[in-house]
Length: 159
Length: 154
Image (spheres, chains in turn orange, purple):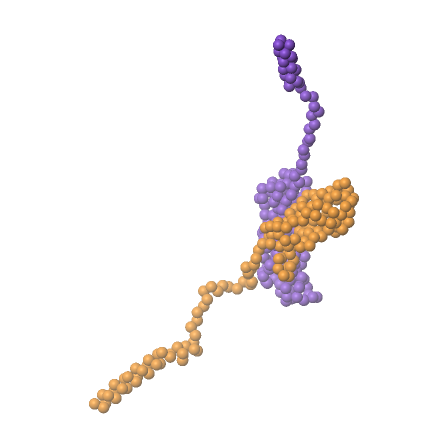
């Protein structure tokens, strides 16, 4: 009878030990042999590729001719920053010999300039290859410079 | 009574003749004229955001649209300025080349009147930086710009 009891107790103990070993097998053995799971999304490295970046354009109004009045610094013009833009403009007007005769402050999109004061008066005549220069800046705290444009035009100065 | 009738008839005839009289006035004509100047819009890429190590980056399209004479054309030229290091002074600039999608160096292009009025032409531009130039570039943030110069040719 005692022998039978010992056999049952031994069996129960063996079952408990076996269960304990099975439950902890991964912790004891698996630590040294991690399962290898390769990322199926990984590709052959070919160097850096383009990352997503904001791509936008700037609309620059172009003119064939700008008409000004001779002998006065006060002038009327129709300069503007189109509303489709997301950049500031700084516009300036240059004579063909490279003399800057006017410069604006920053102009927001959908804003325009109707009245300007030139740095000097002009004589009547046609000034070919004058330049309306557009400097463009991002609308952020740093006013990051963007690409710009020079519009070559004729200044027609009338009496 | 007859006299009154006669006077009435004479008055009526006089009035009728006055109404029928032609008015000889000076005909002054004002000739109204106006000129719609050729105008156009140049569309340029805003910035040149380049990822480190990438040898060719699409920066966007350039195009010219507007209202010009069919005989007009707009010529656009591009002037590039190498990327300059904003974080360190005294280090080499990072040069780049502007190319179109066919791989040719882009220095400029011309839009004729039909292409401008019909909005039919756009050129996609890439900024190319060679692997050697990337390798030689000092650390830091670089900034460079492109100036697009446009003019109408009659």
